[in-house]
Image 1: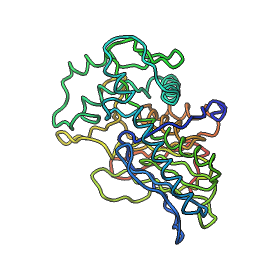
Image 2 (image 1 turned 90 degrees about the vertical axis):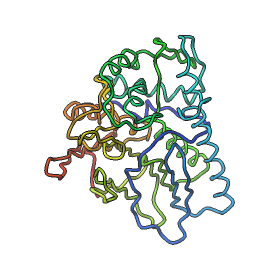
Image 3 (image 1 turned 30 degrees about the horizontal axis):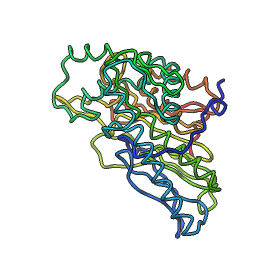
Image 4 (image 1 turned 90 degrees about the horizontal axis):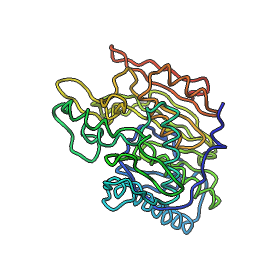
Length: 347
């Protein structure tokens, strides 16, 4: 078993507003009157922080200002939608000269390379050109299938083994490589905010960015936080909950095929691109939720498990201490089956 707590990095404060995210988890406990929270928009989605303890208005104001700064900083480093962000400058480079990157960016890259290896290449931050080609990134949505020759051309620069780190230097080993941290950056930001709150002496809180969540302590009613996992229905405004879990001092992230997709000639194509084929993954898996000690690992692994075959995914999750997963499988009759590891317990 691999102990993620011992491997996990502690992050310094930097700034943020990130990449496209999808709300797939909900904090569904009844909120007691007077509950304090901070909400806003970031990463192309929303964020919410709910406090399970009473804070002074002055403290709440200071926390809100600091959290806004944290999010702005991370975004300035990792958003592909900001032309002068660190990641955009790296993607624009047409040479293999090293790019110096901030410590926080470096640690996200390090963890991304870790999960690239652990998932056998299923989690891959260099898939950005394919994501754009399929209309799920910075480009507009498509109405016809991409040209197969174009896919083949782009595949020549897909693979995280085309990038490397030397200290704080990020290196392209292929000039055409481009990276996107959208599948891990929200989880990273959740972790940074959680660590910031801990340093400020806050012990009871719920942090959510675009559906990626960390819960510590208890809510205002003195109960463990309850999280609802959304039923993965496409083309629906039905936000019903398929399962509920209790979450204390843990993180959860979900990846699914039902929030971001295109329909072409009656067939659905998910934003989850298989970096080994260049095409959206095709399987019964509608969503994967991962519980982990930190949100960045949960975020990355949930993405990787959406790409991996179910049998291989189960074997991978069992390697890691304090990590569990749940797969929601779509049946032809419109119903769902659930597969999970033993530690993923429902409320």
